[in-house]
Length: 219
Length: 261
Image (tube, rainbow over all chains, first blue to last red; front, side, top):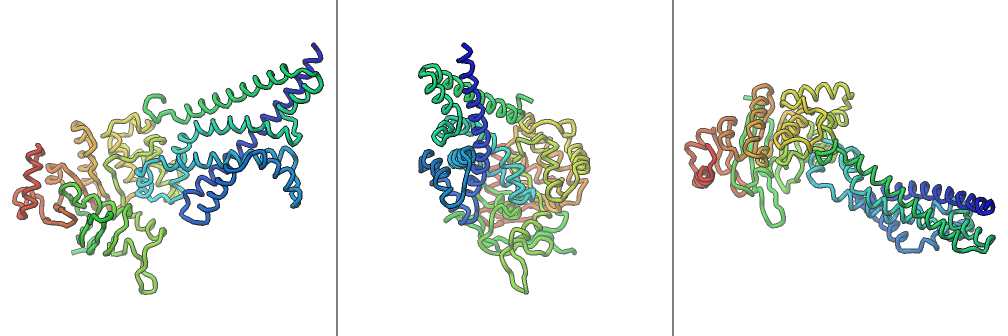
């Protein structure tokens, strides 16, 4: 019994690493999504081209290869990253590419009349975006961002391949030490599922809070 | 006689192959109240949108208070206006839309304070004080904390008017501001317009299908058809004794549809 609780401790340590990766990766993904999503809508060709290249490249190549590239190839050109840094970088850039299209779609879904109200009130382009368009678009983005965050959570398991001690890595350790496959993997399956539920729940409650008053019913 | 506040000179505008405005010219004097009437597609809304810089013109010139709207003078040459020039010119003009275009994620008072705080750097307390005065004037002070979705169409439109007034424009453009309202809500918005007329010295351009209101309110009525001003004059001349056949035909149709003239 004591033996199993020690192993559970290992797995919970792994859970912390997974949570850390998910939070930091999501933060980077959010930044990249906003930058690239707005870049796609830019008046300037160079920005549009850069954003498109980023999105297509990171959507079009494997997250495994991106991670290995960050961890094994970047040091060759003098950019040494810790496993955690490499993990956050690869996950954030990869998921950010998907989420960028969400940002673009959401901003485009805001009606022309809102843009025209901004012009009639003499708001600058950036002021209109910041105070009128993006707050409304963000509400449209949220449900899909929730999906993206869950995708990112699940993708964190690839970092076990570069020796980062996340949930999946620790389950392997426990399996190697105990010879038991069923218990460690069943345990992390449940933990991944609970973490995903937490993300869903968090995003839904954020959505409810932000939508307050918009439909004239809840205030 | 003073100089016109708006001077439109031979402007044209097409949407694809459809010529909305065809060499249109008009002048508006300071403080004048103008009603623009005519069948849909005649270009009356387009001219308001052009004055608000929501549509660009294909040709011609517009001057606001003697200054070019779509051009700027540099070393004696007329160049297309840049964003800075447009922003400066827009300060003189406000617009109220048919569908209100309120910001749904902001409360009534925040809708009114947003632009003065951002574009004029007004501190929040001053902006809110001014907003409350304006909301009071349009009869919406008790709804200052409400969200737009909680308001009726007439209430939304009154907030939209207060929002446009907050920037203290010299010229106000009203684009069919009662067309989207239920009949019983039209009057509360028209009453606000009467109040503006009595209490401010703004120049007002009104695109409307409320012929009775246009008759009582306007100093001058312009009848638009197919991108041109077909007839203009004092309300009585246009509504009681229209000279042009097209004006007569239009008014006949409007009266047949049950509108009071």
